Structure formats: structure tokens, C-alpha cells
Length: 494
Image 1 (cartoon, helix red, strand yellow):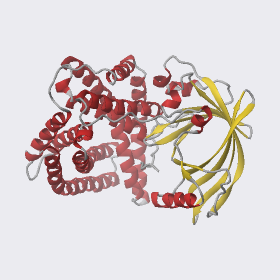
Image 2 (cartoon, rainbow, N blue to C red; image 1 turned 180 degrees about the vertical axis):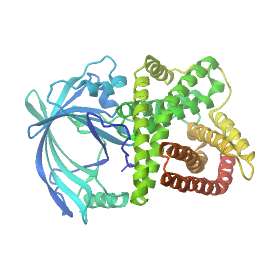
Image 3 (cartoon, rainbow, N blue to C red; image 1 turned 90 degrees about the vertical axis):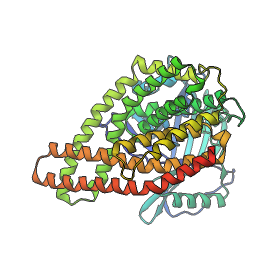
Image 4 (cartoon, rainbow, N blue to C red; image 1 turned 120 degrees about the vertical axis):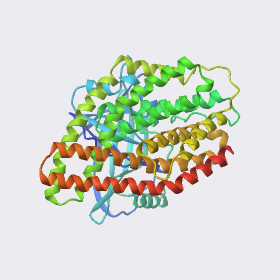
């Protein structure tokens, strides 16, 4: 089961469509498999009739996206599943119309272009199972699906699958449940969604990793493909704006693309790479305000939960104020993602991962990554015993670039690069906490202006003190981590 986040709801105002994060594990079972005895409640047997839509070239399926029209007990709904980190998000529109709703097609603009959606297959699935509980807490749904593939009104194939979908369980309880199912006869699944099995499509295979001695350009193309793919995967969820992780992952992909191109500048045509970096910087600036508000809203909501009721009410009003700001920012994000500038950038990125504009250079990929490490090392060594907030922010940027550069060269450097990346990530977490605390204090001052009562001023003082404590704690954690990073860098590059 993939390691992942817990999806958090976006503070954007409610959408006319519903959605939720989905984390599931599929297992293969034989024809005689029976569910073992599990603690919980039996789920009613259901018949699900789903007609899947895609382009004739299966563009959605190959992008880990599924769109289906589902009928269950007379209820008709359109359901779209899109990537959400390593998991997926399910979006639903209750609608009886026979064509895919325009609101869902608008989310898929990058994946569809001008291509039309057509029905590709219908599945009739009888589903039964158990809602597994630990005490009164629902841990997961374990469902047994008997699927029938229907074409032209005729059943042409049968298959069975076992699915485990998380509810409120933690990693340990889910792993234990998985082991119990394996002991009952379940085994590894090939990872294909039902649609792939119905259409006899093989699961999308990851791109081949470049050989350690491959030219630098091959490592660059591989890295660009990974990050462009991740950006495209999270474009629909960012447009929808109901899960904050979608925008976060899209921004991460943008940041990594900028870092990779920066690292590879010595082997790229200067005008070409500078222009592309400028456009990626623009996209990062489009996404940045939304991400900052997401982080702060989540933080203040956590703070609110630990406050007395009267203080909580004051903070709740401020959180509502931030949510209003976030909804306005979402409209800006959506406007930019439908602009000609953004669509042109996506076209350029897709072309870049196939044929980047290179120049003759003797530099190896490990040398390019080493250059970024040296810049980070220089910045760290300049830090004094009590560095300014601005100095730490600059170091954070340098370390982030060095980490992504090491990722670019990891197939050449091997384990030393991986250990360096791990050390860099640990420092980034502390530097991120430090930066978030600075941002939170700025929002605290905004809180005082928004709510001018004496109680609000007292609460703001307490929260400001918390931010100073967060920064001090993060600074203390950084000292040994800097030493570890320099050590790992020396092991990777000498």
C-alpha cells in the first residue's frame, strides 16, 4: 500500500459537485475465495452499472483518470476519479443527462484538448462486503466485486476483485487488515483499474530509468517527464479546488521543474531555458498565495481546536475571513489556468521533455548536481550563530535546489544521493516550519486588525508568542541537521 498524506479539504467555497479523497488497495482473488470473518457490519449487496467514457485513444485511462456514468437503484450520477498524490480523488455530479457534464469536461481540458469523449465499455458489478470496525470506529470497507463486462448488450467476460478502502484507520490497522486478507487467500494485484481489465489494457508502465552512464540529457529528459507528468496529473484537482493537496502537488511539480532546469542550464540553450524558467516562475507565483492560505488556515484550525470556547469563536471568525480570501484567490488561479499563457506553457513543457534545446557541453550530470550542492554548502557556512530570518529563507532555497539536483543525478550517484536527499528533506521540514511560523505571525497581526476587541488582542499576543516558540524550536533542530547535510554531500561528491 502506498504511503500517502491524509487528504485535507480545501477552504474554497462549496462546489456544485461533491468530492472526497479515496485511498484503496486492490487484491487478486481466486474463484473460490470467501471473505474471512472480520469485526464489523455486513454491507448490503449492491448492483452497480457503470458506463466508462474516454477518448478513442484512451487518453484518460493512460493518465490514471476514469470517467463513468453510474446507475445504482435508480440513482444516476457521473463520477470522475483523478490523481491525488499517490491516491485518488472521486468527484461526483448527480445528473441523469446522457452526455458527460460540461463541468467535469472543463476539469480535463489538458487531457482532452479537442478530442471527444465516447462510451468505451459498460461494467455490471455485484458488490458485497464488510464495514470493518475497531470498537465504534470504522476502519475500512472490504468489498468483494463480481464484475461482468458488457458490450453490445452481451456479457463477454467475468472477473472478481477484492478492494480495501480506508475510512478512519491508521497505517498499522490497515496493514493488519491486509495481512488478514492475504492469509485468507488474497494476493498481489497487477494495479490495473477495472476499466483496464475490461478493455484488456496493460497497466501504464513507468518510464525506463536512465543508465548511470547515460548522457546528461537523458537524465534531464527522464526528470522532466516525471515532473511534467505530476503537474498534469494534479491540474484537474487544482481547478476543482476541493482538496488542498492537489494544488500543493502541482506547485511542488512546478518548483521541481524550475530547480531541474536551473541545474541543467550549462547544457541548455540559454535563451530557451531562461524563457521556460520565467514562465514556470509565473506559474509558481500564481499558485503561491493559494498554498500559503491553505497552510495558514489548516494551522489556525488546529490552534482553534485547543482553545476555550469563547476564544475559539474569535478565531473561527478570523478563519472564515481567511476562507473568503482563499475563495477569491481560487478564482484567480482558475482564471490563469484557463489562460492562453498557461496552455502555451504546458505545450512548451510537453515539447521540452521530448526535445530540450541543448548545447555541446562536457559536463556530466553528477557535476551539475555538485554545483548546486556547493552553492548550498557556501550558504550554510555563511550562517552565523543567530542568522536572520531572511538568511534562513535564502538557505532554504539553496538546499531545496540542491536536493532536487541530487534527485536528477540519483541514478549516477546511487545511495549517497538518496542519503543526501533525505538529509536535505529533514532540514527543509524545519526551515518550512520556521517560514510558516513567520507567515502565521503576519496573519496574527492581520487578525488584530480584523478583530479589534481586547480579547482578540490578548489572544493574538498568545498566538504570536507561539510563533516565536515555533521558530526557536525549529532553529534548535537545524544545527545538527546542517552538519549531517554537509557530511552527506561530502560522501556524494567528495
